[in-house]
Length: 267
Image (cartoon, rainbow, N blue to C red; front, top):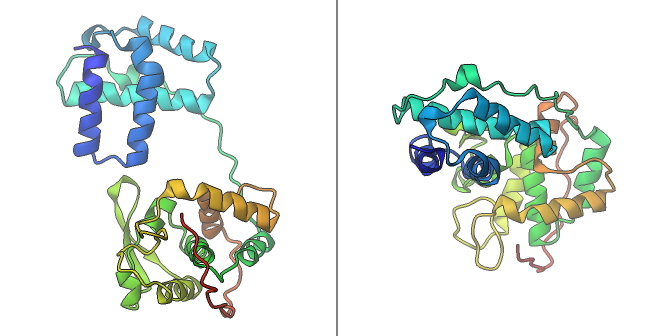
């Protein structure tokens, strides 16, 4: 069996049996389509050699791929070979001994300081549906450290029932309990108070309500960064970093809420 033949089986196994996240599937397909299949697709798994790997890695280096990109591609190839050996029972090279992953540089973690977080909060105008929704999302991310996918997967029912602890399904499909501080609960209640739809999701689009998708968020965070005049990146992941740091603002009484003006924005 060639790598080209094994690829769709590997992806189907990852989606159905390993239950890889949608984002993971996108990254895997990209690694296959951009590099692995064009360079190694016609190679028989049983005959894949060390020479083939050296040639492949040289191709990555010659094309000036960054270390992180090389790492992702080689990890995808490594996972494919493990799948071939363990699931398809094909005798191919041992990826654990034959594929050495490049040493990735330690990531530089960017944090917002307390003053920047306060400017971020103050830049969000909560007299529109989209503004109130954005403030609620920001407070949830700042207060809980949830990943954006976890935050957007939240349903409204637990909060309508008065819960401040909610089980979320995290990375690797592992459940855990997320604790929502008073400030996050306050803004969630404000947001739900002005909801007139019956969509079960906590965070929704306007117009014909549906669950808010992470692909909808980029423009909102770019605008928020501009309005708050922050030079650092402003993303959901950066807010998660802040939540996990030791520079949390002291808890304070939530500020007064400005009523909706009737303005709506379609996401």
